[in-house]
Image (cartoon, rainbow, N blue to C red; front, side, top):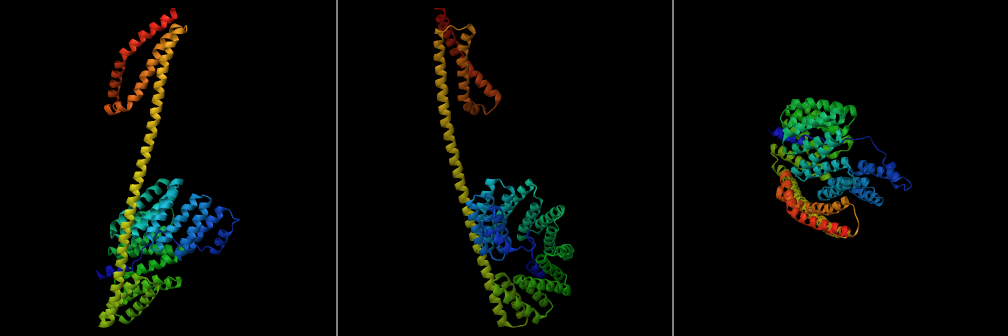
Length: 497
């Protein structure tokens, strides 16, 4: 059971990001600063410069460049690139742990993409917002945003986007400890990547499938899928992902008590991360090797790797690795009956644990603040919508009142005109028409006025509306007959004089 718990610590998950070929950053910077270049060239260069040059390695600079990028695109009202600039800004804020600012930037980017009806942009931002909510510990909102992203990507036929989002949803369930659902989404992602011929995507999905099998205590199944993933990484020369995978393979062999094989893969991962300059990942590998030696009662080696890991963790300020290294050293020193040193490491372990918990508590507070802000925005949006409906209703009411008044005056004028026809000699058919037409228009006018009320009384049923219309026609029939006789007498009398 202890090994299963350790495996959760050792195993590394895989995101949807892949490593691309090196890009000439100096060339991109020159294009961006060349005002003679077309805007499209400058903006494309800046997007690549931020994405590949600073977003991961220097998020502070990425934030500043993204702001500059946004200001330049805003000058020419290029809303597509404005949205891209805000998206980069949000990603950089996320890397800095400024999740509130990240969500704010994403919201602005989302509004621009919605205005442009740029579906893929909308879907990508929703997915990114889902990742932020996951880091805030809000799994419900994370899944909600990823589900919206997935729906849009399916609608527009973005198969690679669907595969990536399925992988992200799997990561959410994995973080919740729901390995069954996580496995289902990872397998769907793998099949989707396979259908479009994306071998790197298949390898990432397979790596996550293997990690689930490890967590479910099925190391042999994990090794089977890891081997397929490793083959792809070797073929594509994806070193960062390969280093992560080697670490996970070592964890599987550790679970099988095959210590020599486990050590072999941990050492391969350590060497590769050191060559890549990925010191934090190397420190994680050292912790894994330290635990392996502790299981074999090789305490001097366990202490050596634990202290190396602790040195790197303290230098880098990584609290999670500091906690893991201190935990390892406290256990080894206790087994060696070095009480004071063990206590020192235990106190450091507790300090890091409390610090991590404090950060999680801050995340919880931030989560509540974000939810409160979201609810406030919803209330404001609802009030604004209701105000728009009220204003529109007033416009319609004023328009209808004016038109009804005009129609009423028109009908009155029409009857007055019929009375004047007596002074003009007209044929009989014209006399009949001049009597019939005003009443027809009057009846239609009454139908228009009473139609909303008739709808309410009848519930919209055609037969009931027809019956009510017949009753209204019957009610005005005597009036029609009276005026018909009167007007005809007047007309024929005037014509006869």
